Length: 311
Image (cartoon, rainbow, N blue to C red):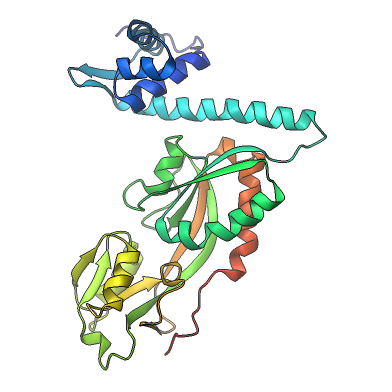
């Protein structure tokens, strides 16, 4: 590709960005053309035009379609975010036109790991939509492994993510956010078992940060995990069936069945921070700010204790 003079502004039209995103998400020019109501040649021409403007190859072409290059992945992420801000521009400008500061309205895309989606978001969304019925919230459950929910935000696929935050999973530098709550871990085991610490340990990949793993390593009574499950719901089911014990955070234990006993691990128990992440440009938008307010308002009510817990 020819190099570009970075002193000159590179202008990409919204339709070019839509084409860029469509090719990446559909995996090829033909499928992108169908999605856009265009032709394969027009899509291919648009991509070549963007590559000339940017001076980089955006897609690897092959018999199996088109796959974004590293530069293409970055471009697609930025493209999604720019297109989202154009939607916000329209929604918030129209809202302001209806009054001095119109109420938040329009889509609000949220990503959350499983226990947060089940137990943290519902009461916040109930309050949010009651107050602002024009907000159309959608929630995607994302495994908190690898990029996790923060990765969905950075890629422009969602507006805000409910994420685990800590030394091993800090807020990415291109995003902003804050901690909402710190949840303790507890020992969970079959109710009435005479010696629960003798049971096999059940675990799942998303469970712990590196800090918690260090705590685990220092516990001589805690064996290596011998049973692996897909998620925390499967862990609860297996422990409830008498197949083992587990060390789990409070959100995962919300509404745990009565067949389980939850035992406090003492003052040096590990904890996990749960917070939100969003992009700098979306942090000031009305819908995101409204959701963060509702999440903060619920913070004292989060289930960090259970009447069945024992010392």
